[in-house]
Length: 484
Image (cartoon, rainbow, N blue to C red; front, side, top):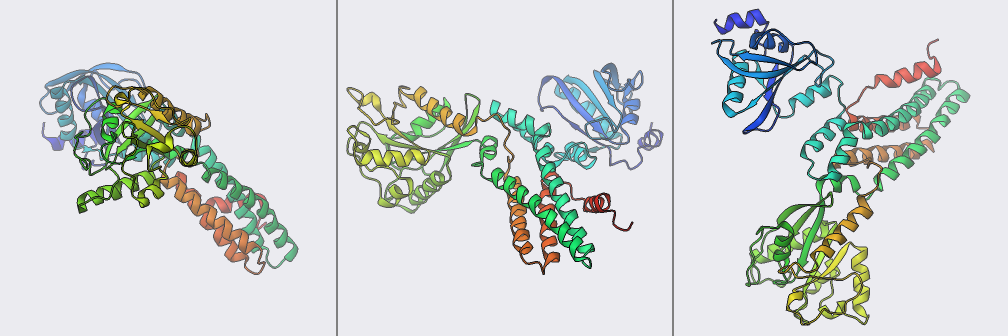
């Protein structure tokens, strides 16, 4: 039968709004999931399935046939989700087919032949957001859950997907809407001084309380962002102290080139790790020294930048060389590292002060090449002696990193900020509230003060994707009966 006749029978004329895509990972597998979403989803099932459309939300075995040739494509498990009770809020069909490449390709070709459009990246989730099935934070939580590599990332993403952020953000928004309603009412009753002043004053404690909550959320040490992106660990030190060897030991593979020649590492090499459920990203950096050439000098600059941005710095020295070449003063000042191994040895002295500075800046002192020593060194508490070659001390170093993660990110309460976007909008809202409180002290500018609240509401609305200014009118009419 010609395609044009199929389009008319199924109501698919020019139907580019119904989308389809492989929802499971590509490649051979036991089962592959193909999803269809849009008005034509039911017609697609009628065209493909011998035996008719299954009952809603009931997994049913059906033979799938190519509508054009009649050739059987596969025996599949078919599910039918009429909208709006579906993931996207539209009519949705799912085809759970055998995961061979030929089977998947045949079914996808058949769907394309029916006039459907291949979905763009994230389009199913976008439709869910546009149809009110998810807010922006829940959609982001879903994306984070798909990309989660560790237990901590999974837990945080699940909490966000289930509305953990949405509830707090909406509570903030609700409080702000109440304050806005009082301020708008004070403007509408501006010719009645007592009423206007009373309504405006009702808004002040609400705004102050909200500002305090935003301050508390912002003062979280970027805990949520670190869990999502991974705890950044920079390995720094002079050339040939074993930085690349340590990275390879953690990774369990030759991720970085190890060679005796100083300056082998020029660029940053990253390795992602899962340590006891916490995500870490290790950065191997160029050796810190007065580099002779421009390329190595750029590597040193990048090493210092990585250390400045890192959550943890592993400051490495060669334990087999009691008096290594001192670091250039600039690098030492930036990293607060001692210039000699003597600073790490007992008894105390200048090194102990340096060590306390380092620990307050999340710097862990590491002495490598312990396998070359006749006996262990007497070190200040907190300094870890390892051998990247034999593995000595690596478990202690891993335990130190995990301890850092537990202390900073192991809280059971879900962070209120998990992305830079969240932080930017909350900061914008907080700045607008500060401007409102400043204007509130000048009673001759109530209109300007109200505008600052609108700016704060806009920022909080961008957090979840809700930007409905009509809600303010609803608050006003319900609480003040204006126009009665």
